[in-house]
Image (cartoon, rainbow, N blue to C red):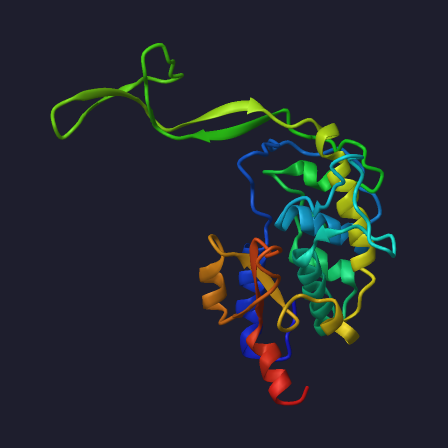
Length: 271
């Protein structure tokens, strides 16, 4: 990724390369084998939908409780909590403009394991999500679940060896230590509609442009990066990225969005 300020370039590239590998979720276990599935043609719409699922989650859209059909606005668009998707779209648009590359090209630079040629290891099924909604290859059948430590009461079982704990007053209790269990993963049929809604909304949002960003972007300014608050905050501090507010109390992205110092410097210079 290029910026116009040379001293920042090396640090930003190195940080971004490590930063934006999609974060593995505990519920998804895809394995580590190669994926033989052929990739469908990448478009801005598909790239944005993949980034939404990888970086945030399936898009949360309103569903009619009686008909179970998605709720739509007067213009036919889905009613969704899509603040994160809009912010991600703005980040890719601004980066593509700065780097003078296409939308898909910049998205691939940002998330190589989802959009580029470097396929994911932890969640390879993401690479196989497609417009038709057919089950992606390597959709997991099992998921790892973290189970907290608990007291074992009479008649209860613990899949691992229990530990005897002595309290302050001398009483003892059998405790099942914290451990990980393998449980059945959701079937693809149970999330297929969520993917198709995510892909549909990405089609609308990917058409939006930065010329009128104030009318559609729920951020105080156009972001240029994003990252997990838990995992990426130190990367942001190292790169001197400036955090910005996106979304509302009811529709707040899971990730923190940022503006690069080079972008702020260009604005101050009138660039």
